[in-house]
Length: 183
Image (tube, rainbow, N blue to C red; front, side):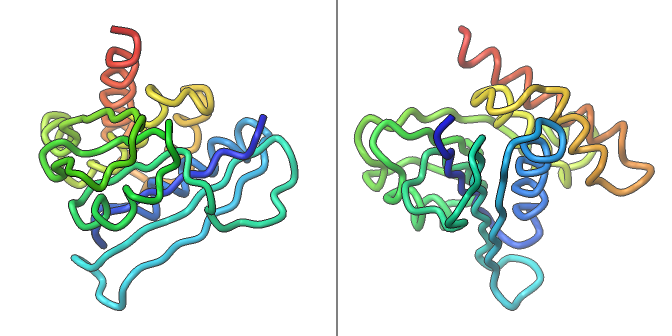
């Protein structure tokens, strides 16, 4: 398996770092792959630009920074505007359709998949689980790791007492992603 380079972007408070961390944990802890995580965020706690880079490989990862972006998952227009041009041709874009509108910044031949993640999060009980819906969507579309690896990584990462809510959110995003790529 070649190195898969991933960036997750959005705003502080959307759970961008947790989303990326779960992707990395699913790959490394629960499937035995190598993974790195680098995070970047503004000094404000909420509302500022936030992103994380995840690299996943069967081989040792010598350089942790994303240089040839395979997958971009975005939850804000600013993140899309900033990072979409860095997707490689034929790359994969996953985006929150109610918060991101595609424009001419998207390179040619990029495959784009949209999800109403905020609405889905509200449907399962709390808008706050938008990021977990996106993790499920990522899992369903990319099949980078098994659903079970993502489920375990989510359970390892969310606050005690919120496990059921978060697994519902994960499943909702996963089912939607599977349906999009198979239908």
